[in-house]
Length: 342
Image 1 (cartoon, rainbow, N blue to C red):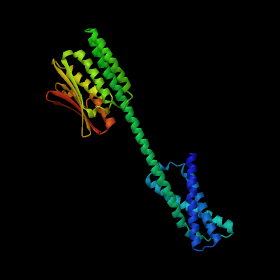
Image 2 (tube, rainbow, N blue to C red):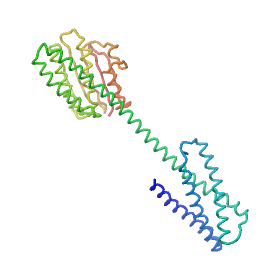
Image 3 (cartoon, helix red, strand yellow):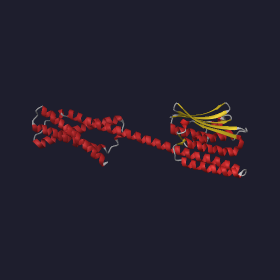
């Protein structure tokens, strides 16, 4: 605050020094008496500096940036009239003290207009500058608040991801442990890797594609142990897409949804899950498909289920309108497709 006041006083001194110098120059060019030139310059510069500084100290106490535009304009007009009158009164006293003479009232009234114009310009510059500053500060704070809200919402969504994923995996291990202990131990090993990845990615906005694909492979291996010959899968990531970053657990949750609603409920002996990621014309496309038919009640993007709704909400927070998410059926497969603009 002290620095702000100091900077204001420095600018004030420079501005009114220039105004006084300009007044001195104009009167000198018009061959005014030397004493009058000096007195006019001093009264203009000194009086202007004093009046506007006192006004600044007063206006700082008011919360005027939140006033209506009409109220601010009326306040400026009133301030101009009052300060111009006070300024001329000070000039009147100054001349009377220095010269011992009293200036005619007519002279003061004639100078009311130019004095008011000078002060009006000062007020307009001061109010305009501070209104712009206030608007800019409000915008910055608004965007900061919006970012904090989005971060909080995204953190909540991330907290939903981990339990959903972990509980399903633990249920798979529980189902297998009484049937095949060797495979159950293998599942626990893979699960520990998945759990570590889940914890490490919680605080991250995005992860590397290769890390996400690696975790998807481990998850599908866990599923293959459970479903044995009932499940086959393939993963295809083109070279241009290998180095991009994506939200953590994004593809894994799509795959988990495909397993839950496609493979687990299927009575077929030969089920398939395919993951494909490619890039074309600056748009990354992520496809996760599973054999079966689309059950719209369970695969509705706007449904209350954690999986699909969570994915859609996370994408909205991160990519705004630069993505699309669709679920559809094609040639005996249910396909979840995400397109992200880069």
